Image (cartoon, rainbow, N blue to C red; front, side, top):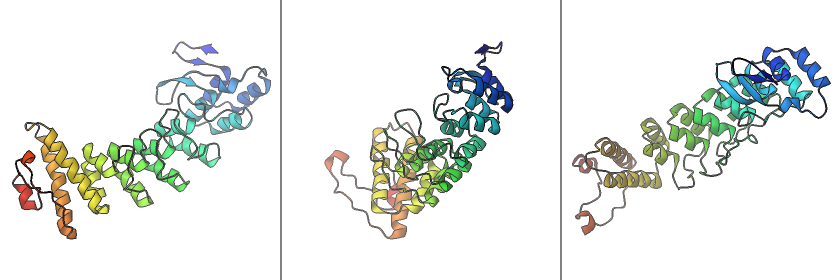
Length: 287
């Protein structure tokens, strides 16, 4: 390994890969001692955008600089492991860094599978979920075209790509996933739909979009319950939250009236000073 004054720590193979010297890479692969797996040696290298990346391999270096001929030599001749990235597999790493060119190289050459490649954390996010979290519709469109599972669930929170996009407020990603066939009624581990999670996270444009396509009793009930519960639990001086929750109640009520969908109303009780549930826009205007 070579220590450089700029804090990089590189093997000869990494140096050759960074500079795109394919002939040198092939010589090093052919003459490397059998007891040294130089393709998997890790060091430190600056990425093309100036970040110092730890645990970089020669293959990562070649991909970062878009030296795809070198990358092919490392994989085909040197048996470089595409799952051995700085932290996640190289496909996931490319999506996080929004390197569409690297994503295409790995998938088109069958070096990485869009469904089998997961993050290395306990949640095991798929490539499409990572792209949805970034809000990168170009990469998402490509992954969907390549057969990425639309309703894959993460291991811990059981979130789908649509759930993650809704939480993050990436409206273009939400629209893309929904129109591609992703389920908007699926619930995560905590029983929450993408619409409810969008409402909780103040993603108003996502709520508006999903309400246009989710017009059923369960959706309206859940949104009304969320709004009512939140308003009761918050202090009166926190005006932004009540206003937002009243907005949700108004939307749900308007949708019910438009669809001529009646609401099941509980009888007034002493615990709530015998107040009645809102059933009309006029009722809401009196809040």
